[in-house]
Amino acid sequence: MEETNRQKKIAGVLQNDLAIVLQKMLLDGGQKGVIISVTKVTVTTDLSLSKVFVSVFPADKGALIVTELNENKPRIKHQIAQKTKHQLRKMPDLVFYNDDSLEYINNIGEAIKGEENPIKNENLLQKRKNI
Image (tube, rainbow, N blue to C red; front, side, top):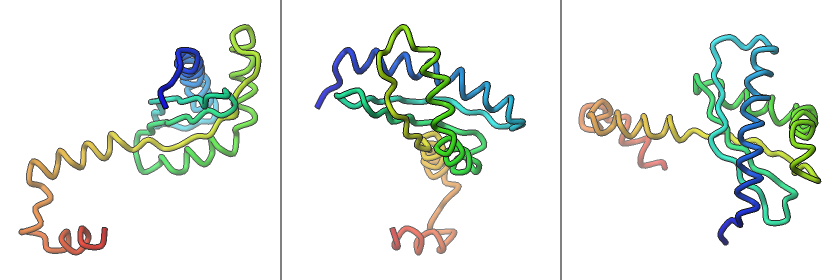
């Protein structure tokens, strides 16, 4: 089902405010050398749940950061509710997911360049057979 204009507007507002809040949290938390960006926000039709996709650099810290974000949901939700109190009546619940699409695209690029050649490295074939 296609998103309504209201869902898109609310998702856009949440995406902008979440980006600001999460960057501030990283700076205050002392996470040096970590960049986080909110790549996509979707809102359900009843506006009760919001899926937040975040991209983390370096990618190996992505799972750790996403679990920390999910643990700190109430605090993040409160900060976003304070920012959007004149725009939204009810703040949707937040669920954070790791968006690893940039890493996936990079892996495809390396495979096309020939850096992961299964003829030269037979271990890759075994890995692909298991998938």
